[in-house]
Image (cartoon, rainbow, N blue to C red; front, side, top):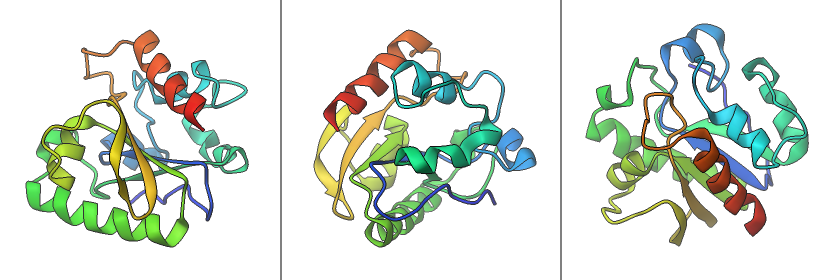
Length: 164
C-alpha cells in the first residue's frame, strides 16, 4: 500500500483510482512512465516545476495532496470490482471529512460514476460534495487513456486551478 500524501486543510486532494504496479513497487503515486499526472500538474500551474514521482511530498507545502479510491494495486483499473469501488468511496468520504480539503479532484470519470453512483457525472465541477469538499472530476491521466492528450489534460487541471 502506498501512503497518502495528505495533511489537514489542503486546497486540493487529488484522488487516483488505485495504484498501478510501478507505483506499488516504487512507493510513489503516478510513477509509471507515460502517466501524465505530473506533467499536467506542472503545465496547469499547480507546481513551479515538473516534479518527479519521488518528489511527491513537495506537494504538501503547495496545499496539494494525493490519495486513491482503492488502495489495492493492479495493472489496470478495470481489475477492480464494483464492491471495491463502493467501499473505497466510503473510505474516501471518511478521509475527506477527517482532513477537510477544499476540493476533492477525482482522476477518472468512469470510476467516480461507479464508486459514488453518479451515472451522469462529466469532467469538471460537480454539484454534489463529498465529505464537505467540492468535487471536481478530471480525466484519468494514465497513458492508457488515449481520449485525453497532455494539452487537454493540462487545460482541465488549469480550469480547476483557476477555480480556487
